[in-house]
Image (cartoon, rainbow, N blue to C red; front, top):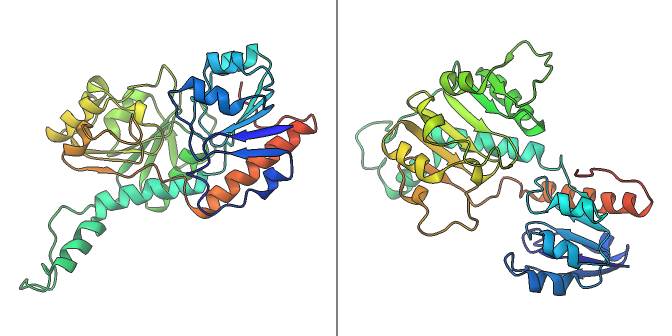
Length: 319
């Protein structure tokens, strides 16, 4: 039996891959060109098992991989796989749905605290000598905001959003959420609302939904017009949830106070991305998932998913 990992570089800086070596003949690639079906097919070859982080497996690749029985997505999102094609061809697809919950929630608040507290900016100014040359015991060059009493609106209410909600509550924020399927909630401090009401009421909006044809460009000129002027928008989900041209225009027009995101539509980011020149736009290079502990957990669950499949038990299956 053969296992092929198509793109392990981002994970591979400090992980131990021995558990996969012990399961089968394990072939590791740092990167595989996402837009080159020929290369993807060559590397898959006659493997029964393929692991992928971000390398896509489309209908053509799946149909032509005659020995393929199992695709393990080393992450939560499954938009890189043609799930319908996998189902039609009898291929099991699994993902790792819970490995990064705490890390991504923590990072979401890191973005929010950077926008509201401006730690990075003022640290830089102090090191440049602005404070030492000034006449006062204090100074600030950008507005600072208190979170207490502000309304945090969560679009989506899965595990990460629920953890973000708890953090918001700990900061004495009013927490509301919208979910496409109504959720039963026992907590008295959080309220479920319509999407329109969330857009209208929130001082901070945080995106926590998966990318589907229905959610692509959810944040666009029309939905931005429904938001409070001066809202802060956070995105640790997927870049394609946002129409970046519309958002850049709203930032430059100061309808949105700030956009803080760990994801963009095209990754790595294009040098002509309009967000790079937009006002009050904070961009990090898709690192919310990347703490060592989180990646170790990701590998552990990936290995366990595969072990269970080999025993005839399927867990974390994507349908």
